[in-house]
View 1 (cartoon, one colour):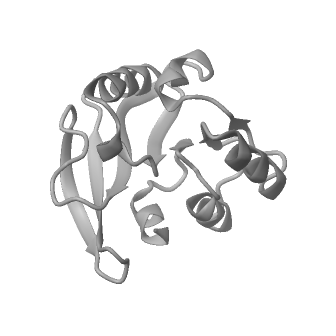
View 2 (tube, rainbow, N blue to C red):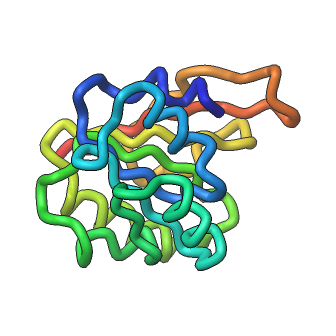
Length: 149
């Protein structure tokens, strides 16, 4: 899902949630995001250790993304890049996630999400389907959401 990074605004401060093995993280680093502009969040401890090894010096938070407001400053993030499988999460988790992200997002912030379904996995926010990646199996969609704070 390297294509996802095409939608991240240049010179933005980014929070990546659901970083997993670091595929998107690596692409962000390759494209110039430094450790003071890229924050990595992953809940799974094994993935966390791997991310800390792969990206020394980058802040890796081994925490639940819906608690971002507890480990990031208010209005500190321009863009959230999400690899979370949001379709698998409860409505309550999604509500908590959006509330927490609103707290850390700068006005006009955006969330870039990929998903395998045809419909929005995050209907709580205003968003638009940006692209379908047919080369991915199964095909994946990139959604961009807007924080109208």
